[in-house]
Length: 330
Image (tube, rainbow, N blue to C red; front, side):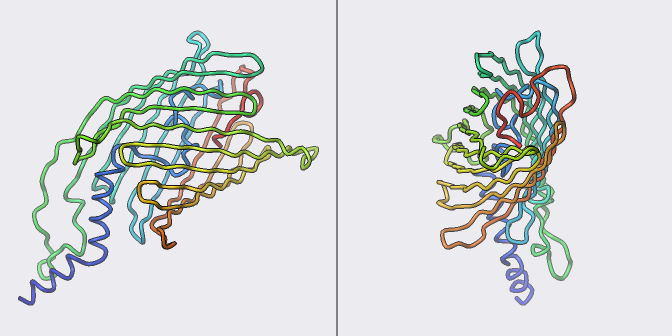
C-alpha cells in the first residue's frame, strides 16, 4: 500500500501532467504543420512562390527552441537553398525541416522541392506562382515518453513501453501566389498538411496563410550613411481549428533592424509578443527572435528562442537584396 501511494504521487506529479498535456495538444493540433515563431523568417516554409526571390542563390539556416515552463518541449531546425533560373523563368528551391518534440518522443521530417514561376511587370514589380511537392515522415518513440516521475521508486524500472510504432510517410503538396514591388509585398499560400492522430470528420487537411507588408521610408531621419524605414505587416494563418494573426512593426536601416509583433491566437484566445533584432550586410544576415505567449490572466504559457542565418552567393544578376525589390523577411 505504501509503495502504491508513493508511485501514484510521483506518477501524477505536476511535471508528468504538464508533459502529457503538451503531448496531447501537440498530437491533436500542432503536429501536422510545424511553424517558426517568426513566420517571415523562413520564406520557403511560408510560401513556395518565394523561391528565387533574391535572384542570386541564397542559403538559409533556422533553429528554434520552445520552452513550456522549465520543460524543453520542442526543437525545430530547417535548411534551404534557392535561386533564380533564367531558362525556367522562375526560382528553384529545396527545403528540409526537422521537428523534435518532447525530447525525441515525436519527430517530423519534411523534404520540400519547389518551383516558382515569375512574371516581371513594369516599375520593378513582379508576381510569382509557386508549386511544392513534399516528402513527409512522422516518428513516435514510446520509450522516450518515460519520465523520471514514471519510474518505480524501488526498482527504478518503468512499465514496458517498448512498443514499436511504424513511421508514417506521406506525399504532401502546396501552392502559393506572391506580389512584390519596391515598397509593397502581398502573398497567400495553401499547404496540404498531415492529419492528426485523432482525426475527426470535421478536420480539414489544409493550411491557409495570407500576409501583407509595406515599406515606408523615413526621409526625415536619413543620414549620409543610413536610410531608415518603417515596415508594418499583417499575417493570418488557419489550419483546422487553429487560427493565428500577427500584427508587426519593423524599423530598419542598411545594417540593423528591430521588430515587434503582437500575436493573437484565436483558438485559445491568448496573446503573445515576438521581439526580433537583426544584422545584415550585402551577403550575410542574422536574426534573433524571442517569442512569448500569455494566458488571459497574463501568465506565461511558453517562450521560444529562434536564430536565423542567411547567406547570398554572389552572382552576375543585378537584382540583389534590398536594391530592386522589397524584402520583409530579414
